[in-house]
Length: 98
Image (cartoon, rainbow, N blue to C red; front, side, top):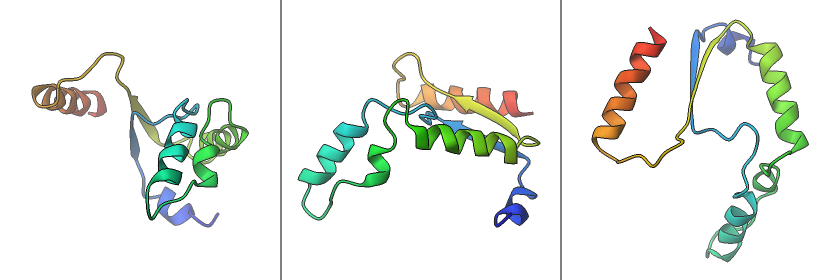
């Protein structure tokens, strides 16, 4: 209810390499944060691990609240060459969303 005014203005949402199901790198990221001066491990990062109940709850809530929004999720399954590869991906994305 708090975000209803914002949600009512959304018509589409794009996710680029978003780990909706969690990431095996969550512990690694927290290790980097805890060993980097000026940073510390974050509880929310540890909740991003695979099979996280927090992520499952967020996904379920999102699905029930945003069911009228057109969603597009893109992810890499092969190494991308920065440069022309990005341009081609953006052009393809525009075609998909139209």
